Length: 285
Length: 254
Ligand SMILES: Nc1ncnc2c1ncn2[C@@H]1O[C@H](COP(=O)(O)OP(=O)(O)O)[C@@H](O)[C@H]1O
Ligand SMILES: [Mg+2]
Image 1: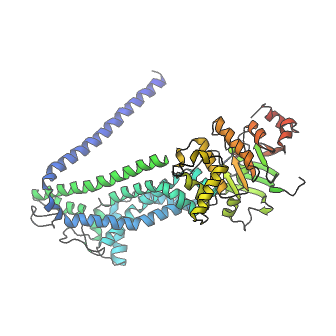
Image 2: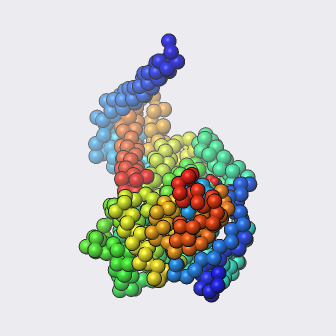
Image 3: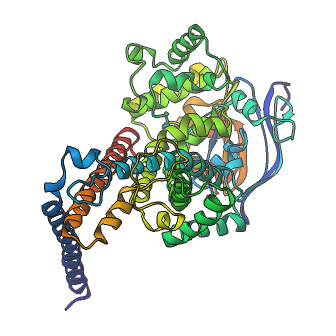
Protein backbone atom coordinates (compact mmCIF):
# COMPACT_ATOMS: atom_id res chain seq x y z
CA UNK A 1 0.00 0.00 0.00
CA UNK A 2 1.41 3.38 -0.90
CA UNK A 3 2.12 5.91 1.77
CA UNK A 4 -0.47 8.22 0.31
CA UNK A 5 -3.34 5.78 0.48
CA UNK A 6 -2.25 4.70 3.94
CA UNK A 7 -2.49 8.31 5.02
CA UNK A 8 -5.88 8.62 3.41
CA UNK A 9 -7.04 5.60 5.30
CA UNK A 10 -5.73 7.00 8.57
CA UNK A 11 -7.54 10.20 7.77
CA UNK A 12 -10.78 8.35 7.24
CA UNK A 13 -10.41 6.31 10.44
CA UNK A 14 -9.73 9.40 12.41
CA UNK A 15 -12.80 10.99 10.93
CA UNK A 16 -14.96 8.02 11.96
CA UNK A 17 -13.46 8.17 15.42
CA UNK A 18 -14.24 11.88 15.65
CA UNK A 19 -17.83 11.42 14.54
CA UNK A 20 -18.22 8.53 16.97
CA UNK A 21 -16.87 10.56 19.92
CA UNK A 22 -19.06 13.52 19.08
CA UNK A 23 -22.11 11.26 18.83
CA UNK A 24 -21.38 9.65 22.19
CA UNK A 25 -21.20 13.08 23.78
CA UNK A 26 -24.40 14.24 22.13
CA UNK A 27 -26.27 11.04 22.99
CA UNK A 28 -25.26 11.18 26.63
CA UNK A 29 -26.29 14.81 26.80
CA UNK A 30 -29.61 14.04 25.13
CA UNK A 31 -30.25 11.14 27.51
CA UNK A 32 -29.47 13.35 30.46
CA UNK A 33 -31.77 16.11 29.29
CA UNK A 34 -34.48 13.58 28.46
CA UNK A 35 -34.34 12.02 31.90
CA UNK A 36 -34.23 15.33 33.73
CA UNK A 37 -37.14 16.62 31.69
CA UNK A 38 -39.18 13.47 32.29
CA UNK A 39 -38.60 13.71 36.04
CA UNK A 40 -38.79 17.42 36.44
CA UNK A 41 -41.16 18.94 33.95
CA UNK A 42 -44.23 17.88 35.90
CA UNK A 43 -43.02 19.81 38.93
CA UNK A 44 -42.52 23.12 37.18
CA UNK A 45 -45.40 25.46 37.69
CA UNK A 46 -45.88 28.99 38.89
CA UNK A 47 -46.02 27.91 42.53
CA UNK A 48 -42.70 26.11 42.21
CA UNK A 49 -41.06 29.28 40.86
CA UNK A 50 -42.43 31.68 43.46
CA UNK A 51 -42.44 29.52 46.59
CA UNK A 52 -39.92 29.34 49.39
CA UNK A 53 -38.33 26.00 50.18
CA UNK A 54 -40.19 23.70 52.51
CA UNK A 55 -39.89 20.46 54.44
CA UNK A 56 -42.71 19.14 52.27
CA UNK A 57 -41.54 18.49 48.79
CA UNK A 58 -44.89 19.21 47.20
CA UNK A 59 -44.91 22.71 48.71
CA UNK A 60 -41.24 23.54 48.18
CA UNK A 61 -40.16 26.13 45.63
CA UNK A 62 -37.04 27.76 44.26
CA UNK A 63 -37.68 31.48 44.75
CA UNK A 64 -34.65 32.15 46.97
CA UNK A 65 -32.49 29.97 44.76
CA UNK A 66 -33.13 31.56 41.39
CA UNK A 67 -33.17 35.09 42.74
CA UNK A 68 -29.88 34.23 44.46
CA UNK A 69 -28.50 33.00 41.14
CA UNK A 70 -29.55 36.27 39.48
CA UNK A 71 -27.92 38.26 42.27
CA UNK A 72 -24.72 36.27 42.00
CA UNK A 73 -24.75 36.62 38.23
CA UNK A 74 -25.11 40.40 38.36
CA UNK A 75 -22.68 41.02 41.21
CA UNK A 76 -20.03 38.73 39.78
CA UNK A 77 -20.35 40.47 36.42
CA UNK A 78 -20.01 43.92 37.99
CA UNK A 79 -16.91 42.85 39.88
CA UNK A 80 -15.17 40.78 37.26
CA UNK A 81 -15.72 42.78 34.06
CA UNK A 82 -13.74 45.91 34.94
CA UNK A 83 -10.95 43.97 36.64
CA UNK A 84 -10.68 41.20 34.09
CA UNK A 85 -10.99 43.36 31.00
CA UNK A 86 -8.69 45.98 32.51
CA UNK A 87 -6.03 43.40 33.32
CA UNK A 88 -6.39 41.85 29.88
CA UNK A 89 -5.93 45.19 28.16
CA UNK A 90 -2.97 46.03 30.33
CA UNK A 91 -1.22 42.74 29.70
CA UNK A 92 -1.92 42.82 25.99
CA UNK A 93 -1.20 46.44 25.17
CA UNK A 94 0.88 48.00 27.90
CA UNK A 95 2.94 45.42 29.78
CA UNK A 96 6.50 45.18 28.52
CA UNK A 97 7.09 41.89 26.76
CA UNK A 98 9.71 39.96 28.63
CA UNK A 99 10.35 37.23 31.15
CA UNK A 100 7.97 38.68 33.73
CA UNK A 101 5.03 38.98 31.36
CA UNK A 102 5.73 35.44 30.12
CA UNK A 103 5.61 34.05 33.64
CA UNK A 104 2.45 35.99 34.29
CA UNK A 105 0.88 34.70 31.11
CA UNK A 106 1.62 31.05 31.87
CA UNK A 107 0.34 31.42 35.40
CA UNK A 108 -2.89 33.03 34.35
CA UNK A 109 -3.48 30.19 31.92
CA UNK A 110 -2.76 27.70 34.71
CA UNK A 111 -5.06 29.47 37.15
CA UNK A 112 -7.97 28.60 34.90
CA UNK A 113 -7.28 24.95 35.68
CA UNK A 114 -7.22 25.20 39.48
CA UNK A 115 -10.12 23.24 41.08
CA UNK A 116 -12.90 25.58 42.04
CA UNK A 117 -12.96 24.45 45.66
CA UNK A 118 -9.51 26.01 46.10
CA UNK A 119 -11.04 29.34 45.17
CA UNK A 120 -13.66 28.67 47.83
CA UNK A 121 -10.94 28.31 50.43
CA UNK A 122 -9.25 31.52 49.27
CA UNK A 123 -12.62 33.29 49.29
CA UNK A 124 -13.37 32.02 52.78
CA UNK A 125 -10.11 33.42 54.07
CA UNK A 126 -10.02 36.72 52.24
CA UNK A 127 -13.60 37.80 51.74
CA UNK A 128 -15.52 36.04 54.50
CA UNK A 129 -12.97 36.40 57.28
CA UNK A 130 -10.41 39.13 56.62
CA UNK A 131 -12.78 41.50 54.83
CA UNK A 132 -15.60 40.38 57.11
CA UNK A 133 -18.22 39.94 54.46
CA UNK A 134 -19.56 36.80 56.10
CA UNK A 135 -21.41 34.25 54.01
CA UNK A 136 -23.01 37.03 51.99
CA UNK A 137 -23.88 37.40 48.32
CA UNK A 138 -20.97 39.80 48.03
CA UNK A 139 -18.48 37.26 49.39
CA UNK A 140 -19.89 34.68 46.99
CA UNK A 141 -19.68 37.05 44.04
CA UNK A 142 -16.08 38.01 44.83
CA UNK A 143 -15.12 34.36 45.15
CA UNK A 144 -16.70 33.45 41.83
CA UNK A 145 -15.19 36.57 40.25
CA UNK A 146 -11.79 35.30 41.32
CA UNK A 147 -12.62 31.92 39.84
CA UNK A 148 -13.46 33.25 36.39
CA UNK A 149 -11.02 36.16 36.33
CA UNK A 150 -8.35 34.21 34.42
CA UNK A 151 -10.88 33.18 31.77
CA UNK A 152 -11.88 36.78 31.23
CA UNK A 153 -8.31 38.04 31.09
CA UNK A 154 -7.47 35.43 28.48
CA UNK A 155 -10.67 36.14 26.51
CA UNK A 156 -9.88 39.87 26.48
CA UNK A 157 -6.35 39.27 25.27
CA UNK A 158 -7.52 36.92 22.54
CA UNK A 159 -10.17 39.40 21.44
CA UNK A 160 -7.54 42.14 21.23
CA UNK A 161 -5.15 39.90 19.32
CA UNK A 162 -7.87 39.18 16.77
CA UNK A 163 -8.12 42.87 15.80
CA UNK A 164 -6.04 43.37 12.66
CA UNK A 165 -2.75 45.21 13.12
CA UNK A 166 -3.66 47.36 10.14
CA UNK A 167 -6.46 49.00 12.14
CA UNK A 168 -4.05 49.95 14.89
CA UNK A 169 -1.54 51.32 12.41
CA UNK A 170 -4.24 53.35 10.69
CA UNK A 171 -5.24 54.88 13.99
CA UNK A 172 -1.69 55.64 15.10
CA UNK A 173 -0.97 57.00 11.63
CA UNK A 174 -3.67 59.63 12.10
CA UNK A 175 -2.15 60.88 15.32
CA UNK A 176 -4.08 58.83 17.85
CA UNK A 177 -2.58 57.98 21.20
CA UNK A 178 -2.42 54.42 22.40
CA UNK A 179 -5.43 54.92 24.65
CA UNK A 180 -7.47 56.56 21.88
CA UNK A 181 -6.63 53.69 19.60
CA UNK A 182 -7.75 51.17 22.20
CA UNK A 183 -10.90 53.06 23.10
CA UNK A 184 -12.16 54.13 19.68
CA UNK A 185 -10.91 51.33 17.44
CA UNK A 186 -9.84 48.16 19.21
CA UNK A 187 -12.43 47.88 21.95
CA UNK A 188 -15.46 48.35 19.68
CA UNK A 189 -14.19 45.58 17.42
CA UNK A 190 -13.09 43.34 20.26
CA UNK A 191 -16.07 43.94 22.51
CA UNK A 192 -18.36 41.28 21.08
CA UNK A 193 -15.70 38.63 21.59
CA UNK A 194 -14.96 39.92 25.07
CA UNK A 195 -18.62 39.86 26.00
CA UNK A 196 -18.89 36.35 24.61
CA UNK A 197 -16.04 35.27 26.85
CA UNK A 198 -17.56 37.04 29.84
CA UNK A 199 -20.95 35.40 29.31
CA UNK A 200 -19.50 31.93 28.95
CA UNK A 201 -17.42 32.48 32.08
CA UNK A 202 -20.47 33.72 33.99
CA UNK A 203 -22.45 30.72 32.79
CA UNK A 204 -19.78 28.60 34.40
CA UNK A 205 -19.89 30.68 37.59
CA UNK A 206 -23.63 30.28 38.14
CA UNK A 207 -23.25 26.52 37.88
CA UNK A 208 -20.67 26.38 40.67
CA UNK A 209 -21.48 24.83 44.04
CA UNK A 210 -18.28 23.81 45.75
CA UNK A 211 -16.71 27.23 46.38
CA UNK A 212 -20.02 28.58 47.65
CA UNK A 213 -20.42 25.71 50.08
CA UNK A 214 -16.96 26.46 51.40
CA UNK A 215 -17.66 30.14 51.97
CA UNK A 216 -20.84 29.21 53.81
CA UNK A 217 -23.71 29.78 51.45
CA UNK A 218 -26.80 28.26 52.96
CA UNK A 219 -28.68 25.23 51.75
CA UNK A 220 -31.92 26.31 53.38
CA UNK A 221 -32.86 29.95 52.81
CA UNK A 222 -36.48 30.81 53.55
CA UNK A 223 -36.24 34.40 52.26
CA UNK A 224 -35.33 36.40 49.17
CA UNK A 225 -32.03 38.29 49.40
CA UNK A 226 -32.60 42.06 49.38
CA UNK A 227 -29.06 43.37 49.51
CA UNK A 228 -25.57 42.16 48.60
CA UNK A 229 -24.82 41.68 52.28
CA UNK A 230 -27.63 39.16 52.75
CA UNK A 231 -27.04 35.48 53.14
CA UNK A 232 -28.11 33.49 50.16
CA UNK A 233 -28.47 30.29 48.25
CA UNK A 234 -28.27 29.59 44.53
CA UNK A 235 -29.86 27.03 42.23
CA UNK A 236 -26.98 24.54 42.29
CA UNK A 237 -26.95 24.67 46.12
CA UNK A 238 -30.68 24.02 46.20
CA UNK A 239 -30.28 21.15 43.78
CA UNK A 240 -27.44 19.71 45.82
CA UNK A 241 -29.58 19.95 48.93
CA UNK A 242 -32.56 18.22 47.35
CA UNK A 243 -30.70 15.36 45.74
CA UNK A 244 -29.21 14.46 49.08
CA UNK A 245 -32.68 13.89 50.57
CA UNK A 246 -34.07 10.38 50.73
CA UNK A 247 -37.64 11.12 49.53
CA UNK A 248 -38.27 10.64 45.83
CA UNK A 249 -40.34 13.80 45.69
CA UNK A 250 -37.30 15.91 46.40
CA UNK A 251 -35.47 14.25 43.53
CA UNK A 252 -38.26 15.41 41.25
CA UNK A 253 -37.85 18.90 42.70
CA UNK A 254 -34.12 18.71 41.99
CA UNK A 255 -34.79 17.69 38.41
CA UNK A 256 -37.15 20.61 38.00
CA UNK A 257 -34.59 23.02 39.44
CA UNK A 258 -31.93 21.59 37.12
CA UNK A 259 -34.23 22.34 34.20
CA UNK A 260 -34.54 25.94 35.32
CA UNK A 261 -30.77 26.23 35.68
CA UNK A 262 -30.28 24.68 32.25
CA UNK A 263 -32.64 27.21 30.73
CA UNK A 264 -30.55 30.00 32.29
CA UNK A 265 -27.34 28.55 30.95
CA UNK A 266 -28.75 27.85 27.48
CA UNK A 267 -30.04 31.40 27.20
CA UNK A 268 -26.62 32.76 28.17
CA UNK A 269 -24.88 30.52 25.67
CA UNK A 270 -27.38 31.52 23.02
CA UNK A 271 -26.60 35.19 23.58
CA UNK A 272 -22.88 34.46 23.41
CA UNK A 273 -23.20 32.58 20.13
CA UNK A 274 -25.39 35.33 18.69
CA UNK A 275 -22.89 38.04 19.62
CA UNK A 276 -19.99 36.10 18.22
CA UNK A 277 -21.72 35.53 14.91
CA UNK A 278 -22.72 39.14 14.69
CA UNK A 279 -19.19 40.36 15.25
CA UNK A 280 -17.86 37.85 12.70
CA UNK A 281 -20.22 39.28 10.14
CA UNK A 282 -19.70 42.89 11.05
CA UNK A 283 -15.93 42.96 11.37
CA UNK A 284 -14.94 39.84 9.48
CA UNK A 285 -13.16 38.47 12.55
CA UNK B 1 21.32 69.47 -2.97
CA UNK B 2 21.44 73.19 -3.42
CA UNK B 3 18.10 74.66 -2.37
CA UNK B 4 16.82 75.29 1.13
CA UNK B 5 13.70 73.40 0.27
CA UNK B 6 14.63 70.24 2.08
CA UNK B 7 11.61 68.81 3.81
CA UNK B 8 12.88 65.44 4.96
CA UNK B 9 16.46 64.53 5.59
CA UNK B 10 17.94 61.30 6.87
CA UNK B 11 21.47 61.04 8.14
CA UNK B 12 23.39 57.81 8.37
CA UNK B 13 20.41 55.59 8.92
CA UNK B 14 21.06 52.02 9.92
CA UNK B 15 18.13 49.82 10.84
CA UNK B 16 17.91 46.45 12.53
CA UNK B 17 15.31 43.83 13.23
CA UNK B 18 16.92 42.05 16.14
CA UNK B 19 20.43 41.19 14.94
CA UNK B 20 19.54 41.53 11.28
CA UNK B 21 20.67 44.76 9.67
CA UNK B 22 18.28 45.80 6.92
CA UNK B 23 19.37 49.37 6.09
CA UNK B 24 22.93 50.54 5.65
CA UNK B 25 23.94 54.15 6.05
CA UNK B 26 21.09 55.81 4.24
CA UNK B 27 21.55 59.53 3.59
CA UNK B 28 18.68 61.03 1.69
CA UNK B 29 17.15 64.47 1.25
CA UNK B 30 13.62 64.90 0.02
CA UNK B 31 12.33 68.23 -1.23
CA UNK B 32 9.06 69.91 -0.41
CA UNK B 33 6.22 69.56 -2.89
CA UNK B 34 7.84 66.81 -4.83
CA UNK B 35 7.01 63.19 -5.21
CA UNK B 36 9.87 60.92 -4.27
CA UNK B 37 9.60 57.28 -5.23
CA UNK B 38 11.44 54.41 -3.56
CA UNK B 39 11.97 51.51 -5.89
CA UNK B 40 13.79 48.21 -5.56
CA UNK B 41 13.11 44.51 -5.30
CA UNK B 42 10.91 43.31 -2.51
CA UNK B 43 12.70 42.88 0.81
CA UNK B 44 15.29 45.57 0.07
CA UNK B 45 14.11 47.81 2.92
CA UNK B 46 11.82 50.35 1.25
CA UNK B 47 8.97 49.94 3.74
CA UNK B 48 11.30 49.91 6.69
CA UNK B 49 12.86 53.16 5.53
CA UNK B 50 9.50 54.77 4.78
CA UNK B 51 8.13 53.81 8.18
CA UNK B 52 11.12 55.42 9.85
CA UNK B 53 9.83 58.76 8.60
CA UNK B 54 6.74 58.71 10.83
CA UNK B 55 8.12 56.37 13.50
CA UNK B 56 5.77 53.57 12.60
CA UNK B 57 8.53 51.07 13.34
CA UNK B 58 8.47 52.09 16.98
CA UNK B 59 5.83 49.43 17.60
CA UNK B 60 7.82 46.52 16.21
CA UNK B 61 9.47 44.43 18.89
CA UNK B 62 13.19 44.16 18.32
CA UNK B 63 13.39 47.06 15.87
CA UNK B 64 16.24 49.47 16.35
CA UNK B 65 17.70 52.30 14.32
CA UNK B 66 20.82 54.41 14.30
CA UNK B 67 21.14 57.84 12.71
CA UNK B 68 18.79 60.80 12.50
CA UNK B 69 15.64 61.73 10.67
CA UNK B 70 15.00 65.45 10.33
CA UNK B 71 11.71 66.88 9.19
CA UNK B 72 11.71 70.63 8.64
CA UNK B 73 15.12 70.47 10.25
CA UNK B 74 13.81 68.96 13.46
CA UNK B 75 14.94 65.60 14.78
CA UNK B 76 11.74 63.55 14.96
CA UNK B 77 13.33 60.98 17.26
CA UNK B 78 14.34 63.50 19.88
CA UNK B 79 12.80 63.35 23.33
CA UNK B 80 10.91 66.57 22.71
CA UNK B 81 8.98 65.23 19.76
CA UNK B 82 5.44 64.21 20.54
CA UNK B 83 4.74 61.25 18.38
CA UNK B 84 1.06 62.19 17.92
CA UNK B 85 2.07 65.64 16.63
CA UNK B 86 4.52 64.03 14.24
CA UNK B 87 1.78 61.81 12.80
CA UNK B 88 -0.42 64.84 12.20
CA UNK B 89 2.41 66.31 10.13
CA UNK B 90 3.32 63.07 8.39
CA UNK B 91 0.31 61.10 7.18
CA UNK B 92 0.49 57.56 5.94
CA UNK B 93 -1.36 55.42 3.41
CA UNK B 94 -0.77 51.70 3.63
CA UNK B 95 -0.37 48.92 1.13
CA UNK B 96 -3.65 47.24 1.86
CA UNK B 97 -6.61 49.61 2.20
CA UNK B 98 -7.38 49.64 5.91
CA UNK B 99 -10.52 51.68 6.54
CA UNK B 100 -12.02 51.46 10.01
CA UNK B 101 -15.13 49.27 10.21
CA UNK B 102 -17.22 52.41 10.64
CA UNK B 103 -19.14 54.74 8.38
CA UNK B 104 -17.43 56.66 5.60
CA UNK B 105 -18.08 59.84 7.53
CA UNK B 106 -16.54 58.52 10.74
CA UNK B 107 -13.50 57.30 8.86
CA UNK B 108 -12.78 60.76 7.53
CA UNK B 109 -13.35 62.66 10.76
CA UNK B 110 -11.52 60.22 13.04
CA UNK B 111 -8.25 62.14 12.95
CA UNK B 112 -10.12 65.32 13.88
CA UNK B 113 -12.29 63.78 16.58
CA UNK B 114 -9.25 62.50 18.43
CA UNK B 115 -7.93 66.06 18.43
CA UNK B 116 -11.09 67.00 20.29
CA UNK B 117 -12.84 68.75 17.42
CA UNK B 118 -16.59 68.44 17.91
CA UNK B 119 -18.02 71.29 15.83
CA UNK B 120 -20.39 69.60 13.39
CA UNK B 121 -19.93 72.22 10.68
CA UNK B 122 -16.18 71.91 10.82
CA UNK B 123 -16.38 68.14 10.60
CA UNK B 124 -18.88 68.23 7.74
CA UNK B 125 -16.68 70.66 5.85
CA UNK B 126 -13.62 68.50 6.40
CA UNK B 127 -15.46 65.45 5.10
CA UNK B 128 -16.58 67.18 1.93
CA UNK B 129 -13.23 68.80 1.39
CA UNK B 130 -11.14 65.69 1.93
CA UNK B 131 -13.38 63.44 -0.12
CA UNK B 132 -13.29 65.95 -2.98
CA UNK B 133 -9.53 66.13 -2.83
CA UNK B 134 -9.27 62.37 -2.90
CA UNK B 135 -11.67 62.22 -5.86
CA UNK B 136 -14.20 60.13 -3.99
CA UNK B 137 -16.86 62.72 -3.20
CA UNK B 138 -19.03 62.17 -6.26
CA UNK B 139 -19.18 58.45 -5.66
CA UNK B 140 -20.11 58.55 -1.98
CA UNK B 141 -21.69 61.91 -1.21
CA UNK B 142 -25.14 60.35 -0.79
CA UNK B 143 -23.92 57.42 1.30
CA UNK B 144 -21.73 59.02 3.92
CA UNK B 145 -23.36 56.89 6.59
CA UNK B 146 -22.63 53.67 4.74
CA UNK B 147 -20.07 51.29 6.21
CA UNK B 148 -16.67 51.91 4.67
CA UNK B 149 -16.11 48.19 4.27
CA UNK B 150 -18.87 48.09 1.66
CA UNK B 151 -16.79 50.21 -0.73
CA UNK B 152 -14.65 48.67 -3.46
CA UNK B 153 -10.93 48.26 -2.83
CA UNK B 154 -10.03 51.30 -4.90
CA UNK B 155 -12.65 53.41 -3.17
CA UNK B 156 -11.43 52.20 0.20
CA UNK B 157 -7.91 53.28 -0.63
CA UNK B 158 -9.11 56.73 -1.73
CA UNK B 159 -11.07 56.91 1.53
CA UNK B 160 -7.85 56.15 3.39
CA UNK B 161 -6.21 59.00 1.50
CA UNK B 162 -9.14 61.30 2.36
CA UNK B 163 -8.86 60.30 6.00
CA UNK B 164 -5.19 61.24 5.92
CA UNK B 165 -5.85 64.57 4.16
CA UNK B 166 -8.46 65.55 6.75
CA UNK B 167 -5.74 65.86 9.35
CA UNK B 168 -3.92 68.32 7.06
CA UNK B 169 -0.45 66.86 7.09
CA UNK B 170 2.32 68.39 5.03
CA UNK B 171 3.88 65.06 4.14
CA UNK B 172 2.14 61.92 2.94
CA UNK B 173 3.89 58.56 3.00
CA UNK B 174 2.47 55.88 0.75
CA UNK B 175 3.58 52.27 0.89
CA UNK B 176 2.66 50.63 -2.40
CA UNK B 177 -0.76 52.27 -2.24
CA UNK B 178 -1.99 50.73 -5.48
CA UNK B 179 -0.46 47.29 -5.33
CA UNK B 180 -3.70 45.69 -4.16
CA UNK B 181 -5.86 47.49 -6.71
CA UNK B 182 -7.10 46.95 -10.26
CA UNK B 183 -5.61 49.01 -13.13
CA UNK B 184 -8.43 51.55 -13.22
CA UNK B 185 -8.22 52.25 -9.51
CA UNK B 186 -4.46 52.39 -9.83
CA UNK B 187 -4.74 55.02 -12.53
CA UNK B 188 -7.06 57.05 -10.31
CA UNK B 189 -4.62 56.90 -7.41
CA UNK B 190 -1.75 57.94 -9.64
CA UNK B 191 -3.73 60.87 -10.97
CA UNK B 192 -4.51 61.81 -7.42
CA UNK B 193 -0.88 61.74 -6.41
CA UNK B 194 -0.12 64.09 -9.25
CA UNK B 195 -2.80 66.51 -8.01
CA UNK B 196 -1.73 66.31 -4.38
CA UNK B 197 1.84 67.19 -5.20
CA UNK B 198 0.86 70.87 -5.36
CA UNK B 199 0.27 70.97 -1.64
CA UNK B 200 2.05 68.02 -0.14
CA UNK B 201 5.41 66.38 -0.04
CA UNK B 202 4.83 62.82 -1.08
CA UNK B 203 7.00 59.79 -0.60
CA UNK B 204 5.80 56.67 -2.33
CA UNK B 205 7.11 53.15 -2.23
CA UNK B 206 6.44 51.12 -5.32
CA UNK B 207 7.92 48.09 -6.87
CA UNK B 208 6.22 48.97 -10.10
CA UNK B 209 8.84 50.92 -12.03
CA UNK B 210 6.38 52.28 -14.54
CA UNK B 211 4.43 53.75 -11.70
CA UNK B 212 7.54 55.39 -10.33
CA UNK B 213 8.24 56.78 -13.80
CA UNK B 214 4.74 58.15 -14.13
CA UNK B 215 4.20 59.80 -10.77
CA UNK B 216 7.51 60.79 -9.27
CA UNK B 217 9.96 63.65 -9.64
CA UNK B 218 12.78 61.92 -7.83
CA UNK B 219 13.55 58.27 -7.54
CA UNK B 220 15.66 56.39 -5.04
CA UNK B 221 16.75 52.88 -5.92
CA UNK B 222 17.32 50.52 -3.00
CA UNK B 223 19.02 47.16 -3.12
CA UNK B 224 19.58 44.85 -0.13
CA UNK B 225 19.36 47.72 2.31
CA UNK B 226 21.67 50.04 0.38
CA UNK B 227 20.65 53.23 -1.34
CA UNK B 228 22.22 52.57 -4.72
CA UNK B 229 21.19 55.65 -6.63
CA UNK B 230 19.08 58.74 -6.06
CA UNK B 231 18.33 61.24 -8.76
CA UNK B 232 15.68 62.91 -10.89
CA UNK B 233 13.31 60.23 -12.03
CA UNK B 234 14.05 61.02 -15.66
CA UNK B 235 17.74 60.63 -15.14
CA UNK B 236 17.30 57.35 -13.29
CA UNK B 237 15.22 55.89 -16.07
CA UNK B 238 17.15 57.24 -19.05
CA UNK B 239 20.74 57.36 -17.88
CA UNK B 240 21.30 55.49 -14.65
CA UNK B 241 24.81 55.89 -13.32
CA UNK B 242 25.04 52.60 -11.50
CA UNK B 243 25.10 49.30 -13.35
CA UNK B 244 22.79 47.74 -10.74
CA UNK B 245 20.19 50.44 -11.29
CA UNK B 246 20.33 49.84 -14.99
CA UNK B 247 19.95 46.12 -14.52
CA UNK B 248 16.94 46.66 -12.34
CA UNK B 249 15.07 49.12 -14.52
CA UNK B 250 15.73 47.15 -17.63
CA UNK B 251 14.21 44.17 -15.88
CA UNK B 252 17.34 42.05 -15.66
CA UNK B 253 16.36 41.14 -12.08
CA UNK B 254 13.83 41.95 -9.33
N1 LIG C 1 8.73 43.08 11.41
C1 LIG C 1 9.85 42.56 10.90
N2 LIG C 1 10.60 41.71 11.64
C2 LIG C 1 11.74 41.19 11.13
N3 LIG C 1 12.20 41.43 9.91
C3 LIG C 1 11.50 42.26 9.12
C4 LIG C 1 10.29 42.87 9.56
N4 LIG C 1 9.79 43.64 8.58
C5 LIG C 1 10.67 43.52 7.56
N5 LIG C 1 11.69 42.70 7.87
C6 LIG C 1 12.84 42.35 7.01
O1 LIG C 1 13.51 43.53 6.67
C7 LIG C 1 13.90 43.52 5.31
C8 LIG C 1 13.32 44.72 4.62
O2 LIG C 1 11.91 44.59 4.58
P1 LIG C 1 10.96 45.72 4.00
O3 LIG C 1 11.40 47.02 4.53
O4 LIG C 1 9.58 45.30 4.27
O5 LIG C 1 11.30 45.62 2.46
P2 LIG C 1 10.45 46.12 1.19
O6 LIG C 1 9.39 47.05 1.67
O7 LIG C 1 11.45 46.77 0.31
O8 LIG C 1 9.88 44.90 0.55
C9 LIG C 1 13.42 42.20 4.74
O9 LIG C 1 14.50 41.32 4.72
C10 LIG C 1 12.38 41.75 5.70
O10 LIG C 1 12.36 40.35 5.77
MG1 LIG D 1 7.25 46.84 1.52
